[in-house]
Length: 437
Image (cartoon, rainbow, N blue to C red; front, top):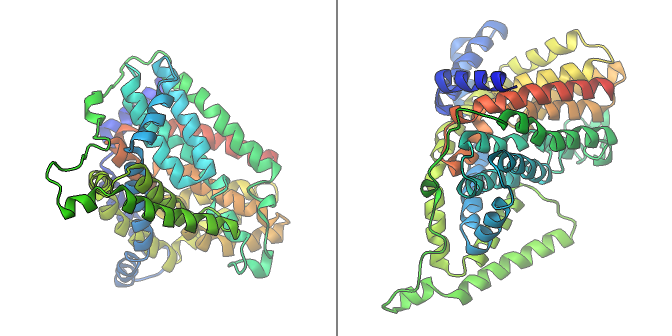
């Protein structure tokens, strides 16, 4: 285990470029494959790429707000104290890494955006509290919990399938989450991974020689450092008005209570609003929250730079029909028994180019659901096979790691070697699970 881990870590550190270069390489790869396989012309594909660049701008803003509001919330005194107390539980570097991956996996199963932020913030606190912990492996542990998100209660594919109208409703109808997220086989698979990821990291971390630590001072940030100005003017009174802040926070709380009382469910926008309202309240003064957000926004550069490129890649994959060609190729040699397995592999491959659960469902759902029906495979299992594939290869796809890496102040090459081990392990577990169940 140690030798294999060290091998992938060396490969990542020596040969893996920055996440931005990864997006550029994927752009050219998608373009060349589409040119060779779809019959589309060079200029057609360039147009698809350019048109697609703006297709995920709203999502890019959501990811930026997840990063900013989550980071700002963590810098408030109460949340900082909780994270610090939790980080003080482990007594060894190995224990710290196991704690981070376990908490991050549970948080990701509950809500994927919450999981990304919690994983990064807890990793930072453990790095400050536990001497001698390998920081790259620690942050990789915080990201690795994300591998179960699409099997959890915020999984976009099973939630789409349970909503009317949906893109496969004429074939599959509306499939309740009791047959997808809360199906016994899916719960067994998800929670087996959640409970065993700490064991995997135990063997990866135990006795590790080339430990790369981080200076805790580099991770320290001001926690509500803004105090009322010595010269009290009308402007400074407003900036430090606790009453104004609490009234705004109260408005947000009333909205959220009303939203959930009327049957609303947790989604990305609501998670952002929860982070925002909680941050406003816990920072007490408006100017404190302004400073916290200004500090947090510094890490959003990767999202602003790379998300348009992934939008362009998605434009090529979907509009040219390349993603459909990949999905149909896997279907062509599937049987009733192997169909969920090969759907999972197809999902994993397509996810490298279309790292969006909703985008992946648009591509694979209308193709795989009717193919599964023809083979006698229930739509619920086909949908969850796509969902597992989408989540699986996130371990080697920098797209989703961007907000986490911004909070942790690391690059993708610092965590990818460890995440490759998670990819191999979970790939084996999920493959066996899809065959057995």
